Image (cartoon, rainbow, N blue to C red; front, side, top):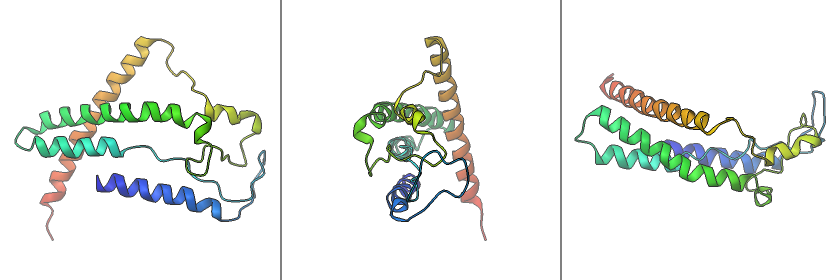
Length: 161
């Protein structure tokens, strides 16, 4: 959770500090004139997933690593979906077009005719079956990532000077 918090704080600090510095486009084509540095965009919300990972891994300390990875990965994905799905809808709304969320900031290479693309949801999957296949792939990838992270952490714990 410490790493996720650090990532979020530094990213937000960059988002809020960058626009304080003057800048101008030096490469073409320049579609949008800018007078200040453009923020990076709002950070990915990884904190809810990190909280779930910490809780699950601490609570299941006596269980096998595979069980921990399955439960923690499933919890991470579930927490991420529960938080990020509504937040994505908010980020596309007019309420996110301010200095806090930076959804009104565009780089010099984006034509004004494409601004609305940042505020609309485009369907990636053509059917609900494709969506659920993607969710299963995401679940498998999350569980594998948690397991690899646990193996990496165990290896790092054994390193000595």
